[in-house]
Length: 172
Image (cartoon, rainbow, N blue to C red; front, side, top):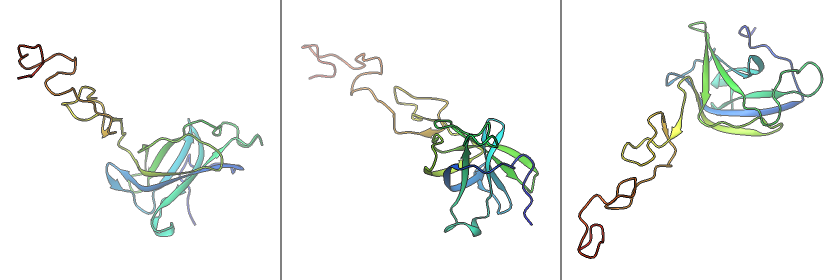
C-alpha cells in the first residue's frame, strides 16, 4: 500500500500536461525512492508522484500536472499559461520542501516538457562572469547572455588605453 503524503491528494482531470525530470534533488543530492514530487497551483495540489526511479522509464520519472476541466471537481487547477510550482516530500525527514525546475514551462493541456532537474536550490539564470558588462550577482546559472566590451574599451564605451596621434583608441 502506498501512503500519499498529506497535501499531495488531488482529483483527476481530463486536462493534463507531463513534466519529465532527469534528476530530482534536495540540496544537490538525488531524492530517495520513497520521496514524492507534487505539482501545485498556489496551494492546490494538481498532481503528485512517488519518485521511485526503479519504476520509471530508464530511471527518468515524470509527474502529471492537471488543469481545470470545468467539471467542478477541478476548481483551482491550472489554466493554460499558468506556471505550476513544485514541492518535494522527503519521507526520511518528514519535510515538505519548495522545489525549482531548471527551466520553467507554462501549463498547456497535452504537452510534455523535458526538464534537466528539479531542485530545492533555486536557480536564477543570468550572466555569472564578474568581468562581463551585464554580470548578475544574483544569477546561479550562466545562461550564456554575458556581454563584453570591445578591446581597449570599458563597459561604458570609454577608451581605457592610450589614444594615438590620429585619435584611435589603442592605435599605433
